[in-house]
Length: 323
Ligand SMILES: Nc1ncnc2c1ncn2[C@@H]1O[C@H](COP(=O)(O)OP(=O)(O)OP(=O)(O)O)[C@@H](O)[C@H]1O
Image 1 (cartoon, rainbow, N blue to C red):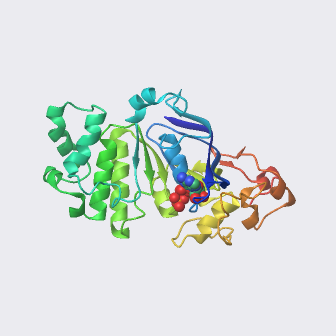
Image 2 (image 1 turned 60 degrees about the horizontal axis):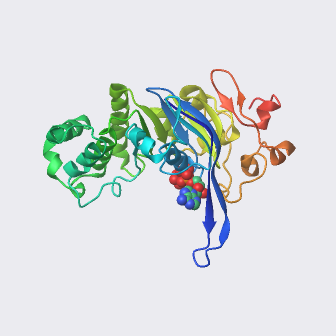
Image 3 (image 1 turned 60 degrees about the vertical axis):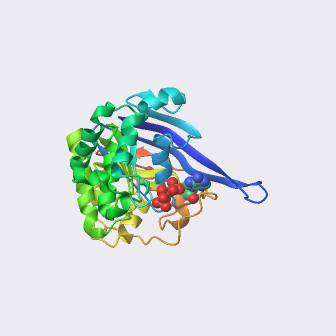
């Protein structure tokens, strides 16, 4: 459904006062992955690793600096705005914060009618009925249509955010931390809703989260991101049961929740993630890696294929070391 090839995004940072360039943030630094129809790829990593930027690039909310984005085999990174507008409805996003994502001055009905109108999903005479259908689909009722966002709880607002995303009948949805702003008690309801809708509608998801238990719950495959690069990728169970990259192991060791496999080779994640304006040379993780070798400071590791559809970018595996 979606494939990204060598995707890159850098931001020029300018001083607000003088307008002079202060540096470049390399937020996404050569990312590759594929998401099949009906599949969820979980994208995990610390804050600042480039997850949201990757999601926004796929939707063309940001222009890539380099690389390709293929939707059903067609490169959408280079097509003009007019041609892209026709495809825009196929690609949607559910945002992290259901409080700010909905316009507080609009009724739910108006919020849901807007995309129906823009993308001509149904004819105007059917708007009401379609709004009722969308609300039912996410566990709300048509009586909710006349209300305003502030009349709903956080979980209900996220249901409305999901209804809005699905109103255009998309094929692919970026779920960008959709439950991290919600009470733990409602998180699993929203996660289960997204999974039920995926099955019903055959959707493909890029599911962004820093919470490993959320990623484990929803994903078929997982990609682990560090400073703009994917360091490990694989099917969810094998990756969680036997993490390969020292960074993946460290993330699992740092998780407060019981995750099978995390007792194996515990690694303490020391210090903070470096700034994306000053990415360390060689393997970007070498400054925090307990297994650092000489080569790690000099040479970026290539992705290598392991068994069962797993890949890892770490010099240890080039050297034949098994962690
Ligand atoms: N518009 C922008 N201008 C400048 N730098 C940006 C911009 N957007 C993101 N960045 C920087 O790019 C890097 C990656 O940010 P991004 O938000 O993609 O990471 P993330 O993994 O999604 O983190 P979080 O979970 O905190 O959102 C960070 O260093 C961030 O400060």
